[in-house]
Length: 217
View 1 (spheres, rainbow, N blue to C red):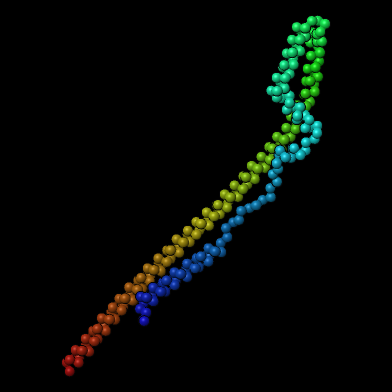
View 2: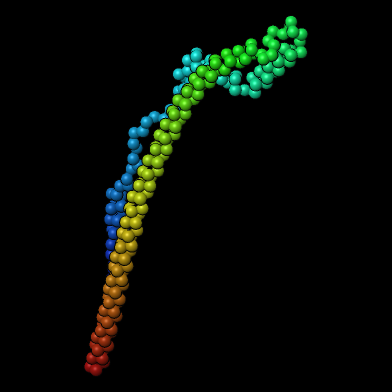
């Protein structure tokens, strides 16, 4: 089966296009996308576990005392005791009153309670301040780490956008070259077809001349 000039040109066009596409994808394959940066970050800690592991017996006692003093149960019980104390020392006979008005013994007991309760509360508050400081530091490290990761991701996306735009531009250039090659090939095909048509016409004219010459003999 003979190959016409048009078929030969089409095959050449197809092979040229395939070669250009292979070269383009080979070039794309050699590009490297930037890798995400992994920076060393201080290890985040579990603040509650860290504080609980460092608690001493005194710290636990102060927490228990502070928790008890700062509860509604303690307020209600103490209010009942004070009410009973005052009522009994007012209602009972004088000889049975153990703390008559102005309730000096009661004031002394409340003073002792306040004197011992205040240090317990202060110790608990100091420990809570340390815990708050650790929590704030941990939150800061978390925020910094998150901000750096977001910054790296955005930088990575910017590089990807640049490469994608470059790929699109190369594709557009490649398509333009292919279109130009196809246009040239079509022009060549038309010229070859015109030449073939001209040659057929000349061949037919020669045959006609030969027949005319033979008939004249």
